[in-house]
Picture 1 (tube, protein in one colour):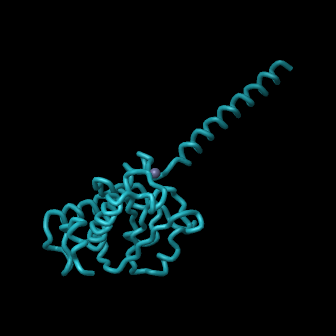
Picture 2 (picture 1 turned 60 degrees about the vertical axis):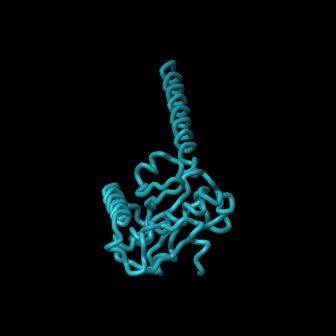
Length: 193
Ligand SMILES: [Zn+2]
């Protein structure tokens, strides 16, 4: 009889341990994915002063990447002017890198604010989607998207960061009309669009 009690208590003890372990994992996972150092280490391919270019875990189309502010900011309207400018600059850099790496030209930018808009990660992020397959882009957040393998992530990171370094070093290979020299915001204001 004693043995049964010992077994029952052992099971309860084990159950409590498992529950605590699961809870900790859940708590860790529910924190912002884009502030998670493991995610950033694995997926960032470009680091600016205030904004980053990172791979998405489940690309909707080849070349689908994200641009985020370094600081944890939930919605676009909460960004500082400097962060908005930094994001714009990184979007331009990433655009050039994706064009070079994937041979694309047209693209879609998507940025969602709030749950009703379909925002799932509470940290401002721009989806950059090359539009060679617009149908696929429409299914951006789909449960059937295939996650990238670790090796694919590493290769893509290297390819894109190399493309950015090359663009920074020389304009020779850039498409006509594109320059890797990003204009300061004050100059942009003076340009008539
Ligand atoms: Zn965050």
